[in-house]
Amino acid sequence: ISPVELGDKAGEFSEGSVAAFTFDGQVYGVPYAVENLAIIRNADLVDSTPATFDEMIEMGKEAGVEYPFVIQVGEEGDPYTMYPFQSSFTGPVFEQNDDGSYTSDLAIGGAEGEAFAEWLKEKGAEGVLSTAISYDVAVDAFKNGNSPYILGGPWMLADFEGMNIAVDPIPAAGPMDGVPFLGVQGGFISAKSENSLLANDFLVNYVGSEEIQDELYSIGNRLPALNASADKAASDPLMAGFQAASEGGFPMPNIPEMGAVWTFWGKTEAQIIGGDDPVNTWNKMISDIQAELGQ
Image (cartoon, rainbow, N blue to C red; front, side, top):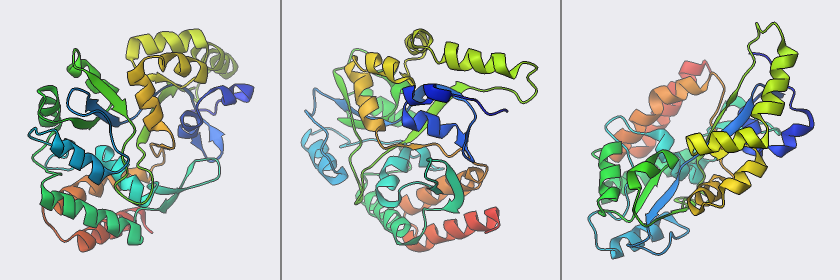
């Protein structure tokens, strides 16, 4: 793919959406939608989401239903969904440059990573996290009123149609804010394009226009990347909740090295939740990833 010249238009998009398409200081796409996780709350069972994970669990228990909180884990783990809690311990997966782009230096090891691993073990032992909870189990539990809270994205909203729900920022499990990955959708220009200038103009000034971003939002129900369109979408309280939860979020790493992380990440989390030694298991994962990366 070829770089895209956003020019003055760059400032009209959310910072995270542009960072998601930035690699080695150049922008390689025009964003049109941003999606992220947030806490979806059953407003008939609880009236708020506290600022910390433990406070949320306590409030969830007071609701008097089967689960105080549900999150999909599954037998293979789900590090994408678990990441907002991990980010409150470790921050980004890789170190970041000043422009928000990622380096190849892994950032989830050390004492911070070990602290998150110990948290996983503790919450697994308490039954708050469980590999028996798959996506379908979590969604059904929330939909049937058996949990006041679920960690999920806008793709779940259709399942909860007719319920009295709210969307809130994600409580912190560790010492920092808990923020999700930002998944950003956009358009690219092929490096083999015979008219890259026309393609650039189409993406920036057509796909990047307020009219088209509004229309794409009405079709996909994803928060627009263009700030003006996002502000209109946020007139919907549910979209406003996802927007608030996205603040400070980390763009999904767009570097090849991320492939090595996915290979080991989820299985390691599932093993720790299931009872394996947290520090040794986490550090083995770090060593395995670094070996895969040749570091």
